[in-house]
Amino acid sequence: MVSSGFDTDAKRQWGVWDLRNLEAPLSMGPLGESTGVSMITYDAEHKILYAVGKGDQEIEFYSYDSSKPQLFNLSSRWTMSDNTKAFSFLGKQNCDISKQEVGRAVRLTQAKKIENIGFRIPSRTGAFKEDLYPPFPANEPSNTVEKWAANEDAPVKTMQLQPSMGGAKKAKGSGLSKLKGGAATTTAPTEEAKATDSADLAKLQAEITQLKAQLAAGSASAGSTSSFAEDMSTTPELGYWNIRGFGASIRHLFSHLGVNYTYTGYNAGPEPDFNRDEWMNVKFTLGFEYPNLPYLKDGETKLTETYAILKYVAIKYNPALAGTGAAEIARIDMLAPHCKDLTMASRGPAYGSGDVEEIISGTKDGLAKFAEAIGNGWVAGANLTWLDFFFAENLIFLDKVSDGLILAQNPVLREYLDRFLALPGVQNSIDDINA
Ligand SMILES: N[C@@H](CCC(=O)N[C@@H](CS)C(=O)NCC(=O)O)C(=O)O
Image (cartoon, rainbow, N blue to C red; front, side, top):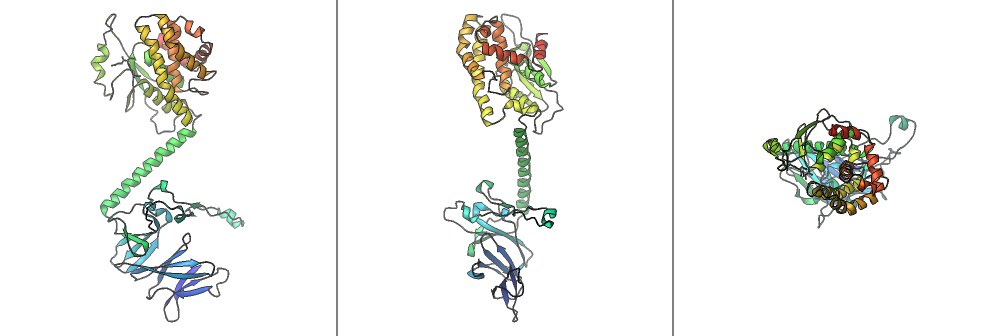
């Protein structure tokens, strides 16, 4: 233990003590020149004692040598412009590591100004030096009262500053200025700085909430509801032509998830023009950023793009359907454009020439590749995902236009489609669409 006090001539002194014997100090020495009470703080990680006397205008630094044990005046002092009334160190977590701060304190001056003081060990490159930031006791109990009372010790919980944490607390006001003794200071924060601080705090709190939600969503991979803060009271509205097309996959997904939704179907005119006025007359009036069909309105959310809608519905109602890890999520995204290409290769000739041979030859290789990857699982691997709803709907379409031929030639895909059709809600959706 280190103490500060006075000798018989009222000169300030430091004392190093062994707590097991408080009869006499292990060593003693002078602590500055003046007469005010010395406020001392020992930085155990850097083995430095900071001493500032009440009424003083300087801070002194001592290093501790445990082998003696003794304190050595580092002959380095930092002079301040006004007398010190009070001085206190803040937790290490308040250091701005981007400025190589190893200690941070606040000082109350005679003029009743509060100053932030950053103690820095500046490096030439400014790079983070890990050895300057050893672990320090975290502000968290490591033991319970019961265990402690039962003589059970627990190691101190520690934390360590890392560059990824950024400057734990950025100094405001005039900014940090390097001063004698490696210390730096700022003036008291202005009202503007305080406002920025609370805005920063609110932003960080929002970020924490968001990250917690993401973590929960990730860990809820096998769960059935999203852990994001979603409004589950809404009834989504799906808009599309009154045909199956891209809209059907979204309808199957809604039905599988048991989500109550409304459907706004637009009618095209009769052949040969297939007049699109019913949709075109409202297309740019509905408030969509990229107006198209299908569209989804869900509360304040307005989306187009089939994949975006499928993904949204999956994440909102069962996040596991959007992938259960980085690899699966990315694999879905990798496969999705190929799945779309395959669909376009099926639809083009079907709506154009109507030539079944052309459809079969145009989709053969793509289907074989998907079949190989699917095996006895799903499009993205072992788990069902939102992409299955798009892929399977295209298989239903191909099965129909080829009169069963395509799937008869692809037993893996036949079995896959049977698995899909047996999923809860899917057959209901198909019946509903056909009705
Ligand atoms: N990339 C869009 C394409 C959407 C699209 O081509 N929609 C067609 C029907 S499948 C349509 O008629 N859209 C209405 C429009 O173009 O105004 C998606 O995947 O959703």
